[in-house]
Image 1 (cartoon, rainbow, N blue to C red):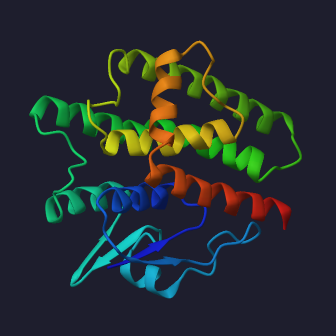
Image 2: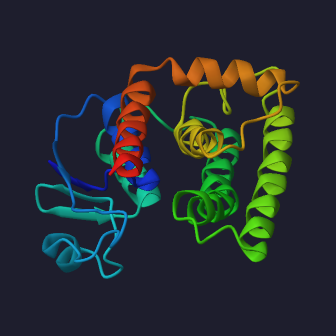
Length: 217
């Protein structure tokens, strides 16, 4: 099994955590990246295997899967133990809904912060306004997450892909200066619980080290 990943790819981080949670040994191939050129030139195997030319790409024998959501679903079907999706239909719907929200609602705000704070363009007014809007959007999402976590250790009872995706983007938000408000106690307890898992701690530490290295270059 091989995983083509990016050193700062949040979507690759989701896949790496899922693989670690399932205890699946794999060869990790970190594709080339720089702050100036990002992923250009594209890794030839990623370009060949994924029409979108993006990581993550997983190769498992004769099977090639790209997109972090599809990879998680593939891993669950091929390697069902330990499960990363709930058993009941109702909780699976809840899980998939939040996993999709992480990608479709959280990530656009994270990307705005990355573009305006990690790749600064002189701090002009449109940039400042874009970052401020992202901060407000993430604050609303954290507040919603706090309500959703009431009475729950994890988003769907047990640790699932909903927690993985949300934790990756929530960590990125906090790193980019948009941490959850301190009064969101459910989020704080969940964040501490999730961050203590070895899979999450290891992968997020790798991302933070890569980001620090890029900023120091």
